[in-house]
Image 1 (cartoon, protein in one colour):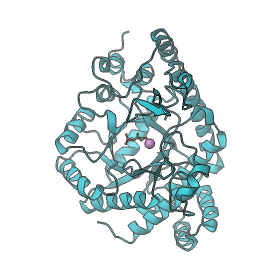
Image 2 (tube, helix red, strand yellow):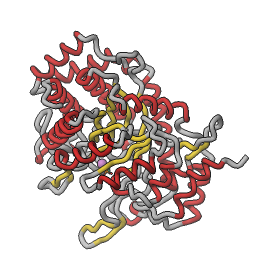
Image 3 (spheres, protein in one colour):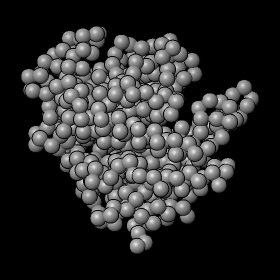
Image 4 (tube, protein in one colour):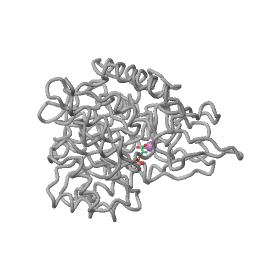
Length: 447
Ligand code: PEP
Ligand code: CO
């Protein structure tokens, strides 16, 4: 039988303007890649997406906290089991600290197993007088500055699908093991605290967490090791080819990940991304930057969550440390006044990107912490629920953001920079951020 919802979700966006899509040079190669994906198995199933939606409904209702994080851009060349394990374990450690900080169960979501397509501010990049297409993520082209690498190749979408399947398999395997338990997360945090310059602060909090018996949730539904996967649903050829109808309900789901989000650059009300997202039943998120208008936000919520279903829509504010206290209050007030059941989450990364003297993109730890503090002040101050954090992080020992932890400086970046896109917090900086925020929140500075 013809499946109406999946056709709707899969196709109606095609007649609308889609920003940030590659110019695939070879239509036959695109058809072949799309056919291959269309005939591939789903990476996630509706039941899991519905479970995440239920978890996020608790976040929207003030009864849970979201910890979402991972790479800015995953890389096909840097596939590494230890690195995946360390990132997953860093997320579990953050979940332990944030769960204690909020006295709430935590929903843990990786920016993993699908985060391969990037929006860019310019369509080309010029070096030494040579102009080539911008790098758009490994799902589209290669990072190397050569004509061959930068030419969009649709077969990369098939490689990304396979890499995502393998990553997901590994994460699921790790998730069932001893290493994913709450107790293990606490042991890992302890090891970190011994080497930290902020040892006294951290040990005090760790002792408190231990005394509280770790934190696995008041109603027992938070399963340590439960880790959902998310990515920006940017590349519509890829997402549409992996959209499937649930055989029980007939509803369409993106099966490339549990949660997909719309980026700041592709959330136009009359654009293809909003149309595609309005047709899928997954839990979804949308990034909102400092230029968002209040009426525009209300219309966006109406398009993406017309049934006002808690857990369906998460708003990820990425305002910048200097703007969050000025811009966010009006938005939270309007949305709250309308009674819209969204979850509010802070991305303190993307509004705080600066250029280091070496030319690399970086972020200051103190700006990241300041935006997070501002987010808590504003949202809690208005009686709404500060529902979570969305971070670019890795469990690896990189030097991409400056400050925090061991106090990385600009001079450390050239030797320790691995990201092919935005700068990530390393494990030490991520934990340091969690401890510092926990101190601020528990000192009742907010609300
Ligand atoms: C990202 O999350 O890597 C990103 C590009 O974010 P934003 O859409 O908020 O700029
Ligand atoms: Co990024």
